Amino acid sequence: MKCLILSLCVVAVCNGIIFAKETAKKQVTPAPASAYSTPDQTTDSGTGSNERIALGFNAQLSNNGVNSVAFRHWGPRKNGIEWIVGYSKDDNNNFLDLGAKLLHCIKREQHLMAYSFGLIGIEKYTIKSFPSDLSDTNTTIAGGFGVEFFFQELPNLGLGAEVGFGYNSGTKQLGTIAGWLPTVGIRYYYK
Image 1 (cartoon, rainbow, N blue to C red):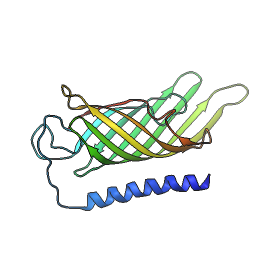
Image 2: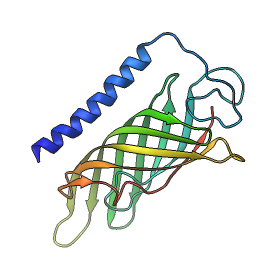
Image 3: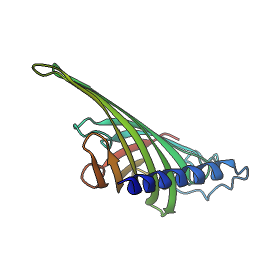
Image 4: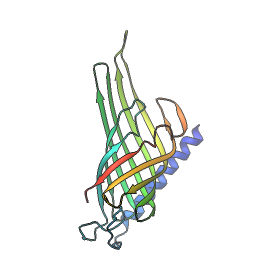
């Protein structure tokens, strides 16, 4: 188990090194303009900037069905970061999910982008029950691959799914994360 956690950490560190290496490069070569802009291409405004910003939805951190808002930023090269925040409260339950993903674009096609990612997140929850409340904080560490699809008619709308390998401290599960991670995410790119 320690070996698997170590390998997840290595994946996350490698993504971080690639991210730092790519963002440290000063030379930015604009990609050719295209009507089908993916995060690595020129924006629709024709400014030549390769940076892209998206706001969307994910259900990737919670073991309790909490959906999260996702803010994704692709940098001027092939690297990006995504912040994930989710909150749910009712009479008996209170959940808060926070997470971050480092992203690296592996392959870009006209309507499809494949990328690798490293994910770390926490989920804090309180469940009111008799005789005492249950309160805990779970940690998720994961790494894997994802795809994002762009429609020809809606080039700024991205639909994506991710699969990989991870560990969750709440469920004590280590393994493939296709059970709770590939929930379809949807993002709208503003820039």
